[in-house]
Structure formats: C-alpha cells, structure tokens
Image 1 (cartoon, rainbow, N blue to C red):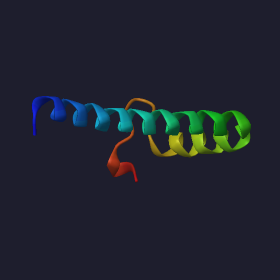
Image 2 (image 1 turned 90 degrees about the horizontal axis):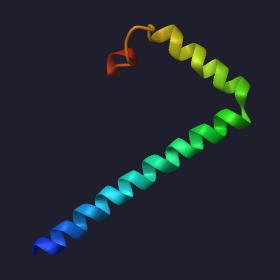
Image 3 (image 1 turned 90 degrees about the vertical axis):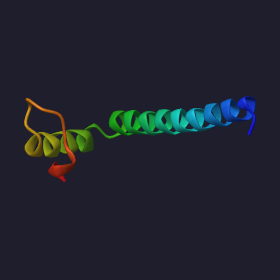
Amino acid sequence: MSFDQVAFLTGSMFSAGASMTAAALVFIIMATVCFPEAAKVVQKEIHDIVSHDRCPMFEDR
C-alpha cells in the first residue's frame, strides 16, 4: 500500500468511528429530551451503582 492509500484508509476509519459516536450521542440526547421520566430512572440506577467520587468501571456491571 502506498502512503496515500494508508492515509485515506486511516482517515476513513476515523471518520466512520466519529460518525457512529456522534449518531449515538444524538440518539441518547433525543431520547433523554423525549422521555425525561425514563432518563430520571436511568440516572438513579447509575447513581445507585456508581458512587459520586469516581467514574463508572467495567466491574460495575
């Protein structure tokens, strides 16, 4: 592969990943706005499992 091909492929993969992440975030924000009651339930469940002084971890599952 040439340098240009590698650069294009790398950029394409990055762009695809960024697009999927952006779409997921938009979906979550829209769902939160459309269903505030459900968002409060989810927030309470997260706060019940994860304490306020740290970030969520895989072990919290």
